[in-house]
Length: 634
Image (cartoon, rainbow, N blue to C red):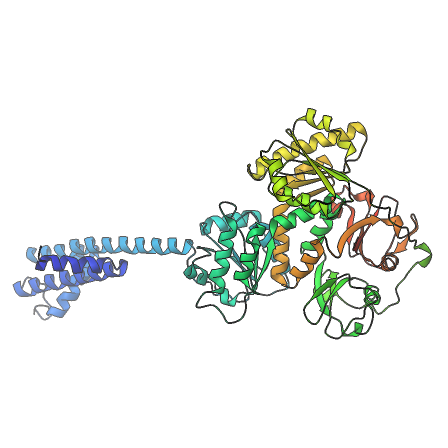
């Protein structure tokens, strides 16, 4: 075995010192400079070749050290020297040594500063914020979420959104700046790190955050990443004692129970595939419903708020419907925390109950204090037509299709039919496996390409009550899938024009930007999956109680939103106040929340004719083609 020599030990100690970084290098250069300066001063003093003082004596050692140091620091000092050649030679050595040492020092300092700047650009510093919103993960959903939160933060001073993902900080900042150029009063802070790493999580200061949004990855197994992130937050040894307000998305319902066990009461979980499927089913049966959902979910118009209203205690829910001019009551949050949409209208509001209302803002929920203007003679009560079997055509296939079929079975009358047209493989086996207990639907499958015009012509599309086009999101990129959807929609539009029939079409678009292109197809509704989920996540991150409202709203059991003929409520062509519509709906056990006018149903600038929470005293005339938007059980 080799024994370490004295030289080896010195080299080893030197290597350890150098590994300490720029500070150690600067220390060594300083020591080398001091050694050089002292050595030159000793030589000059010992040989007596140094300059003389004014009294003719030689300069003392201390002054000679300073003289030598000045030559080492400033190369120009050598030009002013004169006298003994040996002295000039010594100063030249000091100057050349100083040039070498200080050049090295400048290089080390420059490298150290650049390294520090690179470290800062990587986004690894601690976020000194409080009451901020944290977004963990990176996907296309980040942009609509930030856009919505910016609007929600308009009245909040020092608002901040912190985004952390395993993506370069500069790239995140550049993309956010390009997609959202105006963030108002809200500051956007990006950090690079892993959401499942405890040390990285501490960078974003979750203990001081008001809410945390967890996004699933677009690749791999997204749910496992979300569950591990929740575990990292809730089981960190340095976590805060108060419960977190976490909002997370789960893609596969099979992972929902595990996520609930991990999250406990600290996380609101959004089952993405199930939610989008429910919205697709509800929307395909009611033109304009997706517009209503967008109006309720984004922060740009009217949203759902909670408010204690002591003056309504003891009054009926039906009376509360007429108590507001600029807000629409849709339910109650009872003092035990349970949320009920469309409670029995003759039930009494008790102390501790909270009003759930649609309003422009939480501070606009104000009792009107005036007598409602009801045109009683304009109210008419027409019974809805009995349910009949429906025929639905599904063009395309993805993992949400079986859920859509199961959900559709909850709404349609017995004897209804669904035809699935797709060139995807194993569709029939997937239906058999995932849709075993259909009570009202008969499902058949046709193996064909949905972009083939001959196939669409042979289908007799106009004979179907509803058409749903699904994107091929399982096997294609969003842009490729949306392109095929657009081609299919163009064919369907042409078929409708040539037959003179209005087709009820609902289309799934993956990219919001492609919706503008698809509007030329005049489809009834577009479901932009990522945007709807992003809007929901943003809403729940601002108010955790909203999750119970949306769960009830999208569930086939209980109250849901319907668009029903205006003539079922009031006489056509007669100007009436919205108070009148509220009263007409109340008599049917429903809550009127808005209307859709057919004359502007294709005008994007006017929300496709949808008006949610209108001013109740304003008078409007309705036609037989117009619809009243109501919260009802059927």
